[in-house]
Image 1: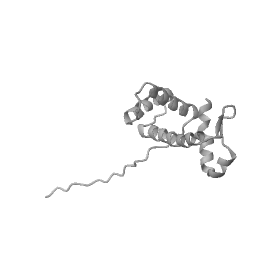
Image 2: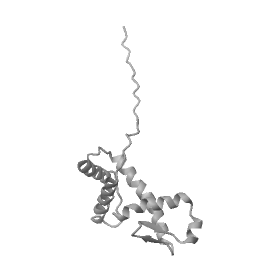
Image 3: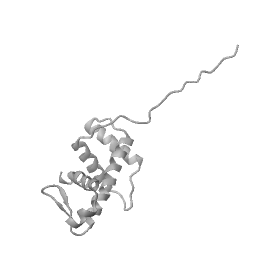
Image 4: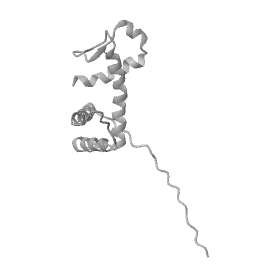
Amino acid sequence: MTKKKLKVDVVVSSRERTVTWADDQKKYMLDWYIDYLKDQHVGFKFKKQHHLLCADALNKKFAMGVTVDQVDRQYRHYKENWKIIVAALSKSGNSFDHTRCIVTISESEKATLCVCCLNHIQVNYHFLCY
């Protein structure tokens, strides 16, 4: 009699559960990254180990149960959108209105921007008013 090995195919989902981030959790995460960055050298880049430290801090404070990858994605989301905001503010005639928490863009600049870029700018500057 020969023994046959059973081959078991297990489908593992690479996608993690969706986490809805509350505003105070987002603010805490961004503040954590800013505070951590202040103590680092010029040219410092965040790596997986740093996202792990942030995930641990979030899990301790809010009991969120977030993973390193979820924190990394959230960080990359804000980093990508921040480039749009910096580009908008670097152009002459554009400024930030602290009372309304919005970027004011000159009329000539508005004509050249797409609507989706304007929406990104309004959403992401919301966190500067905390």
